[in-house]
Length: 380
Image (tube, rainbow, N blue to C red):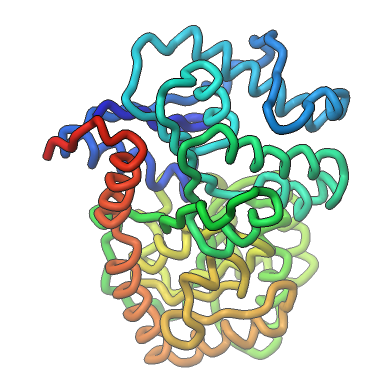
């Protein structure tokens, strides 16, 4: 079976899709199923000129809105780039973003199409203060789910909570198949170490949705209690300056290191002790599984896919979102009790090895691919 994995932008960023899809390609190639990646280069802007038409709703009702117009122009650009660069046919296309999914079905209507919805763009925009719930951008972006349902042969997502999130926007939510993300274990090499001061680490894009303001306030509370720690923040984004200023205001600047963007943070994580990320929402939260595979204790918020990965008190700690005091209490537990911290990390590692293996993902995807294209037989 010849497979195309269609991404949005090239897989350059750590976490999420980029942590998995290139490794899916590698595994399928080894199995004898030739697999290629396709994406839109970031340099391609404003090239596409074709009108955009959808089957389940009228796009014209939303045109003229800057956010929606930008989305539609990206769709046109993807059409332009695909027509320019795609020169062969495939037995199956697996898209990992709504735009490539709908473009591929438009241009290759007879090719079976699988779509994995990895996250909610509209929810991220709301949490980051860019749009309002119920506004035209929100209505447009949630309408895309219905269009995907009408056009694709199978919709997948990474968590049960995200399937529930999509329920109001599709006709048959029960047909959405949940396949949690998986990770190539060879990338993660836990290292035995003993830090004199507990080292906290977070890895994410620096945007409001990730709740790093809550984390800084929790760290200020820890410092007031006399708990020693260093917080390492890996990632970049539009609120980095704001977070650095907040660290200064909270008298934390000497306790925090801002690293900026890092391509392979999993090479760095095993030297730390605790992974913490108080997200306001997560469809899955791949970085928690990655941190678990690095043998770190996990502290996260009781939202979305994070709550499906962490069993509170067993393989990590869960706290309510928007609650710096609860987060400080959880961090104090793992900082002050090395044995408890070690046991959480060990259990998290065991679960991640078992539940979030890439081999499990490959097996499940093979089954899906053969169900929607039974003419193609597996070649082991």
